[in-house]
Image (spheres, rainbow, N blue to C red):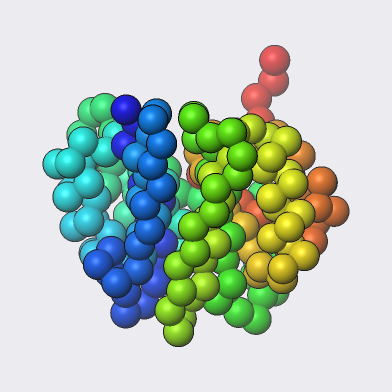
Length: 186
């Protein structure tokens, strides 16, 4: 069974106060808020000790912190943070508020989208687990209509899939991905 976590930097929160679990017959997933990079490092140690092998981080986690986390977690644990294309980063930097946040996660064993919500004064997070790219596009459109400020995709979504989602919603909100952002020549 896959054990997956998506960590969000939410000031004043911890996994005890800001988290949700989604599980099915193929996966066990946690969406959790941590108060800063140090708290994130400590929580990842706990997750690794519990057998989590795939961890995504919101875009607030910088590459230096992620490199340290990867080294500390050791082999067999994949840790990636959300990144944005130049165009999407420009849109993100224009946001006045980062309070309304969407996450889309592709997960085995999902047939219809499954939503979990987290809320505190600082952040309202809507995380949706989907089966495939088609469902991800539809969910992104719904989130954009609800006026979510920005969306981050799990590591399953590479740059090309992220761009498909961006195009599907006509660039309505900034979108980043924890997936591979490299464009290579074939």
